[in-house]
Image 1 (cartoon, rainbow, N blue to C red):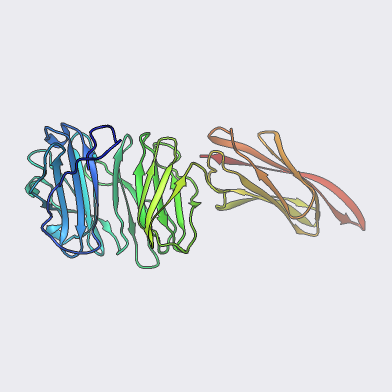
Image 2: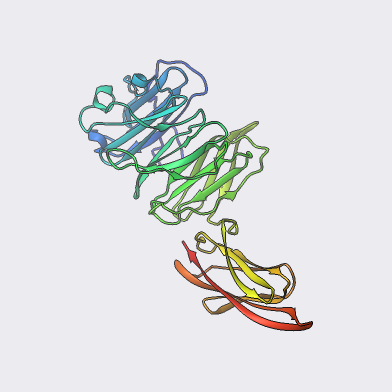
Length: 373
């Protein structure tokens, strides 16, 4: 569909071509390439579609054309016929991925000739092993080109992220839990940050995003939907401010949820800091991994042996954040406004124990650091 008035109406439809193939459960994608991309003289729509057991069909169609008759079966030489995806890093890097039931391949336009001629594409190269839920997705933008896909065996799978180097792919970065995640979708916003959504092993809809355009560290996952849904053909759209929508195909129709920046309280691994007190000890647990900007976490103070805690006061960089005088001693630490990097964390603990039948009160300060990503 094409609009000539900025999207107010869409009166004109264009047929990008006839695949001349048959199959079921067809899924695909389309991207736009401006004039000059991959040697084409006009604006172009690049489409890709998978047709089970048949192949991966690619086509480049000029926007002012009424149609295009040529198609390219990019998966033919390796019998790949699932999860076709394409991305364009303008002007000349056009890459496609395609999968079998257990392997994922990639190839790119070789830099000359018509993209609608398969002989002008590099030979399929193995990217990785995959599984029936590969859901491979290619994206590109200011930070480069990336692919996300599922790898691993049944019940021990996970989605990973890899960056295109121009000749291959960087090391995988895990995006999800290990188990049976499904229906992943990846987007790169106009600022170059990546966003990823998926259905987790328990059937819940989850979403996380990169904390910077370097796309090395990601937020903790938000849980956006209950486990009663089926999030097939999940699609994600996000702007540079981190706001957007997630849509999916669920009986009786298409459903959608808004998304916004944010993440749950830190619930990752903790480290232990302790000091001896009489015949026992007091200790606190604090984040072992980095904490996201604005993400809150809990400091937990406990005892070991014959000692009683009376009060705990927690401070960050010398500024008091909270006091608790009742067990269990848990104090929430906000991080909003703190700069990236290491910060001092202290828990002043007032405790008592018995020595020679007499009560002895002591004050101990537990000191450590935590890091804002």
